[in-house]
Amino acid sequence: MKCRITFAGAGLIAAMLLKIGSAQAQDVHFTQFDASPLILNPANTGAFNGEWRASAIYRDQWRSITGGRAAFKTIAASFDMPIIRDISVDDYLAAGVQFYNDRAGDGNLNNFSAMLSVAYHKFLGQDARKVLTVGLQGGYTQKSIDLSNLYFGDEFSEGMLNPGTSAERDWLKRNASNYIINAGLSYAQAVSDKFSFSIGAGVNNINQPLESFDRRKASKQLGLAMRYTGQIGAIIGVGDRFSLKPAVLVQSQAKAMELIAGNEFHYKLGDDYELPTAPAVFAGVWYRNQDAVMVTAGVEFKGFRVGVAYDYNTSDLKSASNGNGGFEIALRYIAPSPIDFARKLLYPCGRF
Image 1 (cartoon, rainbow, N blue to C red):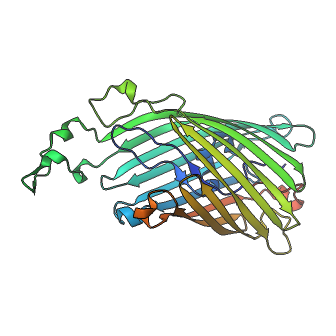
Image 2: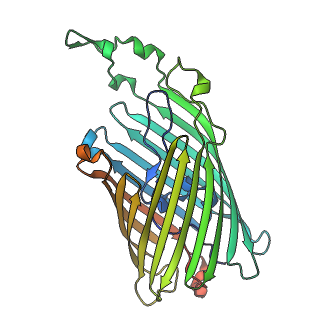
Image 3: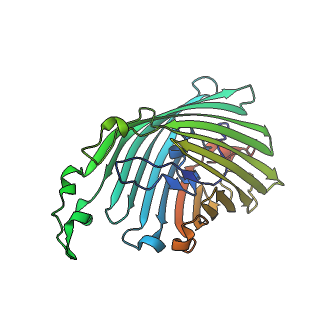
């Protein structure tokens, strides 16, 4: 089986603001976006070197501002694998499933999604060192809020709180659900044994679903705007064991735009450093424009990748957060291909 390369590095996946009436859930916001590749781009489905891949990540954010109970807590998990191989020489079809859940604030504003995705990987040229991928994703999302934990201005009278008496509650819904369609493209190439790169582009919320907790709002004003993503990454081999993995991510939704850039330093250990399951250590430094500096670190062994990340807030919010942003822990496992144990890899593969 040829090594399939895709967007390299460990960086951040951050979606823009999702309009839901007067309330907003936390963005899709991971520093270690390699732990949630299907959220970034549906074309990442099945884009790895191995038999199957399972990933999970947990993020805890803004605890220093909101306190433990109201902190933003996010978890995501995914599973993907090739399902039809050698459709045309090395081409294959892959499928995957992605789950995401975020809870934030005193009102327990919850954002849940379950997505299915497929991707077709078309290898170009006789050496199979170029691959063009098309991905499609669809699924269900639901946002909900706990009204019992919210208090409104008209519930306060002469300094006394009368919970449950607000007329505001009559026009608030407890949940809003929709179906979502996403799509993406990616191109990856191994230029040499020491250098490979990939570029990708995706669009989310293609159907622009209508969502709001406010029963009074005109639904046409609350369509979820499409979110556009663009990524470019590379793997640069420096010697036999050491490699650099720079990456840039740009995202845009409505009037919001985001730019993230950084690099992962990766070092393989042991005598079998040319095998895909060779033990390794890594560390990365990343910058989210006008928001935060992020650091990542972790280990790889026997197909597992364990990583941690921390964000140091640099925006105007740092006066309230004391610079504290978010903490993450991520786990990924790629089941190795028996063919890869029988031979050495032709080039460094971004086992994303």
